[in-house]
Image 1 (spheres, one colour):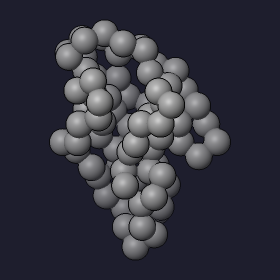
Image 2 (cartoon, rainbow, N blue to C red):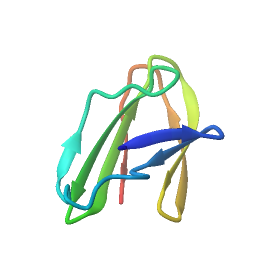
Image 3 (spheres, rainbow, N blue to C red):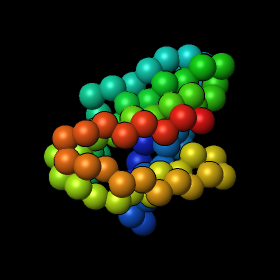
Image 4 (tube, rainbow, N blue to C red):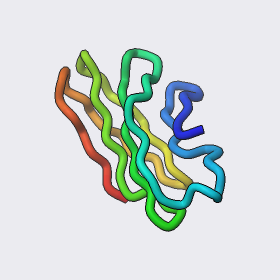
Length: 81
């Protein structure tokens, strides 16, 4: 599972198999029509990009890190790890 929404937070890579250490995921849709794209290398998240049809604030979680981002309608926002 590349992403899930739990208690209003987007949790990245909560259960991705270790057999997929490298790769990208695009085209998924989360609630609110939020589109995440992620990139992994050597089993670690490298970057996550989000876009949304309307402005909104998000909390994005990966491992022990939480980041707040503000999405602007129709623009992409990237987080690097």
